[in-house]
Length: 326
Ligand code: ADE
Ligand code: ZN
Image 1 (spheres, rainbow, N blue to C red):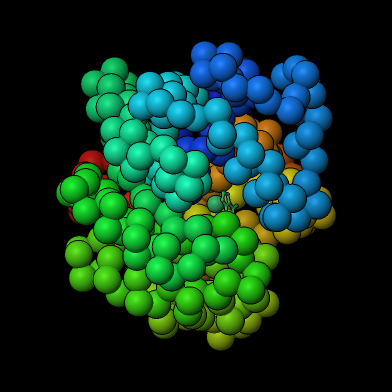
Image 2 (image 1 turned 135 degrees about the vertical axis):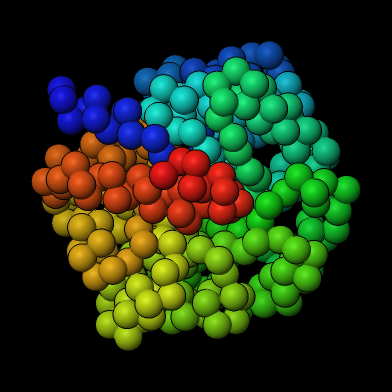
């Protein structure tokens, strides 16, 4: 339709994408075969059938298990290249890609293997599609502060090629405050900071991400709307929220897409953006996310253009590059 092509044609940045969450079942099977690994699924359909989640933890268990097929630098390269192909087709001009090194180093895969595979794919995407990118190293919040520090130390040789650190995995019971010191250390090294907050966790976790971690963006942030003072503050400070509609639906943050708060966020002055989070698991890439909320909430073209514009403004590109995209 007309609206579909309008959405695909909107230049956009993707700011919330876990590269491990872009592992399509077909690639999972291909990598399992290439690496001689047995996987607990009989077919691609069988894998897709397993992707029915009641909450974040249900998803995380399956997502960490799926990542086991990623073993070599070539695997990480191929995974990332497959994402860039889909992103380019969706009108993505710039992507800030999260990766979870601890998911891999815990299995004996070297940090170097992971990041060099990602970096070579990033260079190719820029050469082949003009698609620019940045990397965001995420700490798994269910692991300890000491393990996060260890991961930051492993990243040291690549810090000039890592733009930010982030915080993901099981939110409830692992408040931002747990990572105050490692985020301060990352900030001292010149890294930008993001954190998942207010996806399943309470508005208090968003307050902590702002006041204790001093983040530059909030990932998700949905539950901020429960706190009027917090909502006003986020709007006043121009804080970017990286919202993920299909993820919200699949992880039962909302019951129906018709309930999605994206347009209320815009009305309240929040700098919301649309992103895919883990597209292979949640049923769609970034343009699918725009289309899903556009249909369910009757978004106007002006609102969709605002969301796309917000994605460049909220990116970690330098101001001249942001301007060039607007
Ligand atoms: N890791 C990958 N996707 C995530 C999400 N939506 N929330 C927390 N951790 C994640
Ligand atoms: Zn996420």
